[in-house]
Amino acid sequence: MAEQFLSRLNKIEESINQLGETLKRMITILGTVTEIKSEVRASKDEIVKTLGEIKKQAPASPGKAEDNTELAKMVVQEVGAVRVFVQESMEALKKEVKDMLANIEVSVPAPVVQAAPAAPAPQTPAAAPVQETAMAGAPSTLPADRGMKVADELQKILDSMKMGCVAGDVLDVMGEAKAEIMKIVPSDPIMVGIDKWAGIVAGYPKRNELQARDILKIKKALRKEIPKYRPA
Image 1 (cartoon, rainbow, N blue to C red):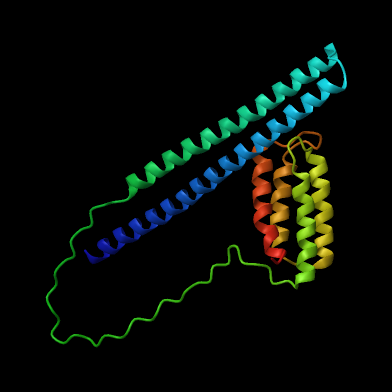
Image 2 (cartoon, helix red, strand yellow):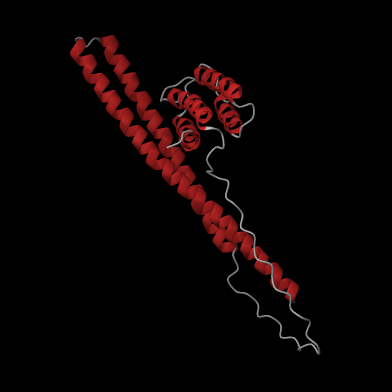
């Protein structure tokens, strides 16, 4: 009976841990939504400004009107794709949270009352729990001058991640940045991140533009990594 009780408690603990991870993902997506809104607003302002400059520079012609129409369609499509992505992600997370809550067993069986032993065994003091140092978000241990150089290379990748960027160009920038970082420090955890981002970009044909959701995902990761190498 005691084993069943412990087993059920372990399952409840696992379910709670999974629920915590799911909530973290939901917070991440909500942060991404805020960033998407900011990017869309900035893109909208740039487009409006560009269209205004085009109208001032020369009288409208059928060719330019068609270009403007195509540009507007492209923006609508990108915004629509982002909206669908966010909605699908939120729905999936809602379902996952509901499933997690349903799997958590609220009722816990009452412990079995056992007869007291004739001679209780001496109790040994419980060992103090060892606190684990959280490594996530830890600053780089590189010297300041080398860390700054790594941050500059990461900034180059970030600058290349603009709306409408082409996969082949971004891969070239990532490859050059990685090569320069390897000259500064032969081995560093950031190499894993660069390989991961390059893997996302490599999924596109080299002449194709990256989708907004992938651009924002990589930019968000870069903005978290750069301050680790650039001292305040």
